[in-house]
Length: 75
Image (cartoon, rainbow, N blue to C red; front, side, top):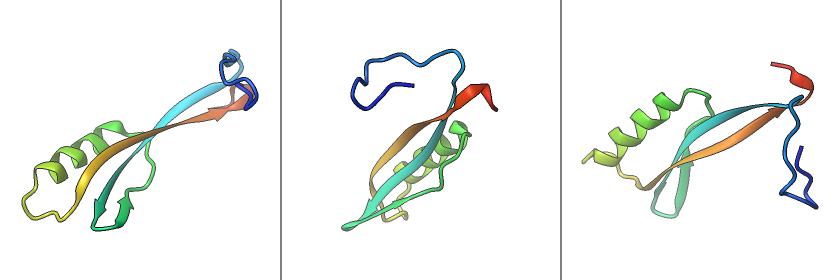
């Protein structure tokens, strides 16, 4: 796993990663987000629906991604 001291280190084959996604938006000064999910399609659909909505009060829609590392090849 990359260390904090050297972020350029590569992951080993023994570590599996899964990406998780969520949608974040703002209503005024308040930041709101969905729960993390591994289903990118759901987050992408929400992004398109909310971004095009004339009734949804949010602004600055962003899809966020994080990698979940499972050490030792556990799934």
